Amino acid sequence: MTGISGMTGFGRAEGALGDWSWSVEARSVNGRNLEVRFRGPPGFDTLERHAKASAQTRLNRGQVTLGIQAKRADSAVGLKVNQNILARYLALANQLAEEGATPPSADGLLSLRGVLEAPEEADDSEARAGVEAAMAVSIDAALDALKVSREREGGQLAPVVTEFIDRIKALIAAAEAEASAQTDAIRERFARRMTELAPDAPGLQDRIFLEAAALATKADVREELDRLTAHVASARTLLQQPPAGRKLDFLMQEFMREANTLCSKSATTALTGLGLELKAVIEQLREQVQNVE
Image (cartoon, rainbow, N blue to C red):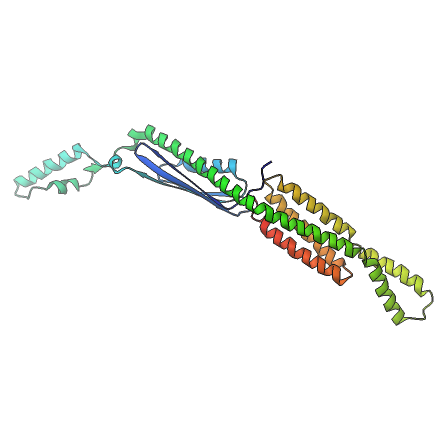
């Protein structure tokens, strides 16, 4: 199974066919879903549809910008003279010259409307279709390069994410050790308080035991710690099952929910400190997960 991919990357491809040459560049940044923006040369309208379909087969998330810069050799786009229109202008010019007007110059005639025109694109439809197909191949190549770039980013991201997960696991273990001492701490605190307020109350020790037990039950964080441990295992599994970005995003919410509950139930300063540190590491992990495809 391949590792995770990032969502930031760059890919480029070049191509040429006949009188045409072009370059394709594909870039991507983070995004909740896959969004493809295309900019291509005029007259190649079907390329946008191909670019979006090609991106969807390779990528799952991210904002992708794909652009094509194309040019045609000057010799291929040279203008031609419309002989029929030129003949009409010459006939009119000769008539005016007989009436005393100045004969027109060659550059003057060529500047008249309709004398010079571009070659008919319809005559070159088959060649243009071939160029368009070749450009589509270059689009695929640029997107392939982009995917490789994103996978390279994922390779750099994976150990960072794993390190944060390891830190969370260590904090959970420390919280488990600290939580086991919560019952005694609650009992001692409650007994001290009750003794100060009503030292001669009948059945004080029994009441202290019952009330302390009730408080300890409310402050029991074993379920939160068990769920946090399960989330750590899920995160490790997801890293081996890309694309995992959306699922990891959701898992970060679950991590934070349990950490918040842990802090709210904490009865000792030490456990509260561990809970706050846990929340800080989860937030750092969340920031890294936002880069995962």
